[in-house]
Image (tube, rainbow, N blue to C red; front, side, top):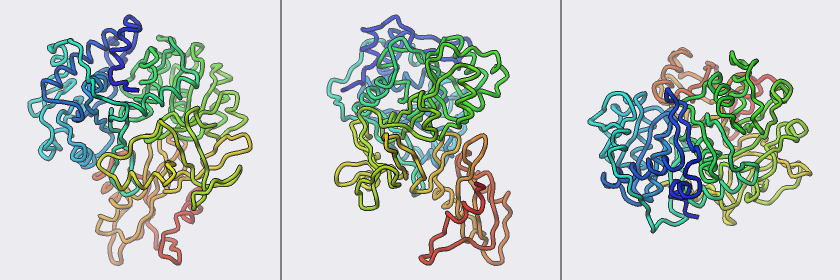
Length: 511
């Protein structure tokens, strides 16, 4: 199950097949598997010369591009670990991630040069910097120049096993700071197996619009396609007009997105004339897909939808809803993928029957290996029988189709990103005028859900909604900042002293 040298294998099996199109470059950069393997060897040799060995971390902070995959495959050849940094994080959150994982090398694109400047003085572990473009920062070297000047001699690490960690992906935490999920070679292999079983084929072509620091971007389809020998078209960032053009240009056979993206595709200026006939299906995840959107794609473009559910710590290929069930089972995440076991349990971990609501728990070989340097958090999500507790409230019907009912820990999803209210509330409480606060998710036509902060001010103190939003923006990634702040005289409190968010939702969320 060791798949650290994916490109080395593919260079043997399908050397001249088109592997990657980097559509963020002009003109597009295109690479066969032979060329991708050569790039991985060159970067691996550069990293080894920089002192990177098995188990060491190298980090990347960049928009999607071939360089992200170069770094992943090069680390795989060395048995090193790629730390995938979420570029949407605030500088303070990024510094926490770097201090936690201690990468020795940091690769970054010019858009984040300012963040690198800000965090570098406190990032003691970083010894070398590689910039993809733009001007050098703190003596950084140019990525492509460094890669091309290095040897293309094959690099492998014979001691790597399936349980070694290939990369670290950050996932939000209900206690505040992001946690680093440890993604092993085993997890990647089994996720690929689950994905292939659900209709990925040799010769497939897909356009990836998810950030590669996300499980959805790196593993949902990209790495599966690299293993099976398909073609992945990378976009720098999601642009609906460009995506429609790329699907047509490269004759994509499937495409994955979140409901917000599909809604934006239908309002793109080239939607009416877009020919999507090459698509065998589209996949949607992150939030329920409205039936009206399913019908619009079906009726106007002849496109069928699969829907699913995944998470960083498990898969991410967990559940799948077949196209023929998209309307019949609207709102369902589908059935568990082939090598995933799923249950709905009560507060005593006892299995519940059809129609009963409880927590969704999972078991299977595509589970992550816990959280990096956080054994307590790792223990908290695995029970005595080995079931992974998702924190999602769910039910299933008589045909074993699952439905997410609520989120046990109040997390909501905005534009496909998990947002944890506790993290936002902790920042609000640092404002001197805030006495009590609660953050809830409220429906939004564009993003699915956005945050609303309900705040009670301290007696005799004042603060405007704008001031509180500015305070949040100074401390959090932009996507975490609530859309609105409501100043209230009091919050609903239970007899046990807990804020009743349910009552706030009933007040502010119209049915």
